[in-house]
Length: 133
Image (cartoon, rainbow, N blue to C red; front, side, top):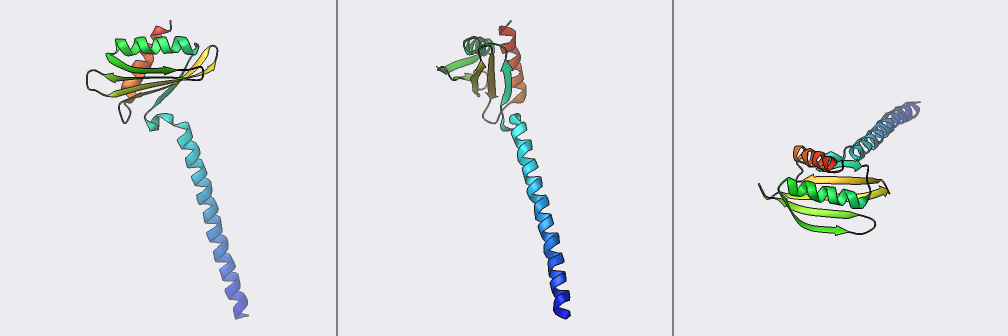
């Protein structure tokens, strides 16, 4: 009888522990999903422009020049483009990655600074949108 009680207590304990692990695994999956949805936490501003890749590249280059960003490199092929530069005011690196989503849609990732400067990225994004008009 004593062995039966010990076994029941052990089973009850394991049931509680395993349920707790299930909750932790579920919480971990939820946290991972949250990370995927918050791209700017990585220092990038993600947006979509309602134009093709070529027009998005031109508007991005013009906005960078207007923002006192010296363009150091532009790489482009049919699947993507990347424009890099340096902000003349403080030497911060600036990168705009463009990926065509269709003939009239281009995804952009804008990063200003090594760790990311959200306000500066938003200003640059507004200037790019203005150049699309």
